[in-house]
Image: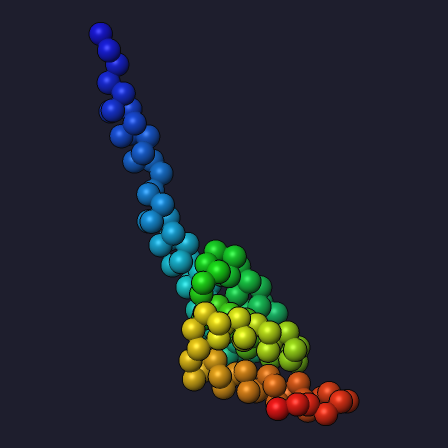
Length: 120
């Protein structure tokens, strides 16, 4: 008698989610981390928010919001050049008014503390 391999394969496949579903779960986890970071930013928890955003980006590198919040966390820590680079990454993913405003803030503060005159 031949074993029923299709039944065994079906059972094995049901234990791991399909790739699309797994990707969706990672994206949802990244979104939750980004939302938690936003709450921390409102309470001035910049370092912890930065850590959460970095985790979110590792789960979903295409999350513009994670890059935006990471840029804000770095702005809050007065790391303006890093913030500007991070916000440029957000803009490369999806340019919004919100990203533009944060980029302008980072550029302004970076120029304000720079000993050299900034270029426009």
